[in-house]
Image 1 (cartoon, rainbow, N blue to C red):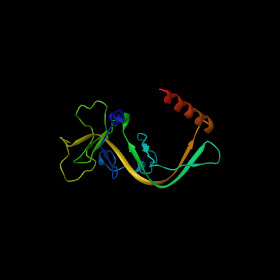
Image 2 (spheres, helix red, strand yellow):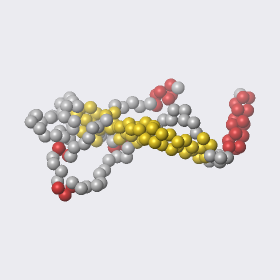
Image 3 (cartoon, helix red, strand yellow):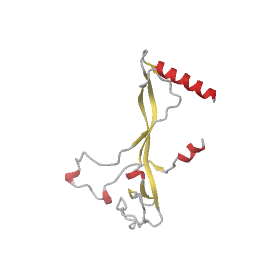
Amino acid sequence: MSVLRRSIVRNKMLRPWGFSPVKGDEVKFEDEDEQYTYAEAPYYSYVPEDTRMDNYGRSNIRFANLPDRKVLTVNMGKSKNGFNVCKKCGGAEVADANPNGTFSFSQPYHDNHPLCRHDGTVATNIFLGYEFLTDMFMLDISTIPRNLWATAMRKRKAYFGRL
């Protein structure tokens, strides 16, 4: 158990309410219909809570229909370094592996407030995430036939029982 606890890494996560264009400037007319964007691939997680899986006939296939399950999608940024986010103005950037304390992002919205300098207000290595409900279908296909698996487990118990 202690080895498992040492391997758990904890990071802060932010649920973004939306995104603004770079520097908060109005989007150019020719970019209004842009349909492609780039982001690091998100990571999805679902940890089943004692999910009962049904056997499909006498095959090596088990399945479960799981309605209304919570799924967490997390964007950990480039190389899992997260994002730097200013707590004052909301400006953000992809975090570097070796931060030097200087930030190159600007405040996302232009308003009547003075320009944000991000002095001591930047949270670093923040993951972006969102939890949502969805329907799922889990499929488990064993590559080891059941009778072979049962035989291997009996031999394992017999061997370790002799020690």
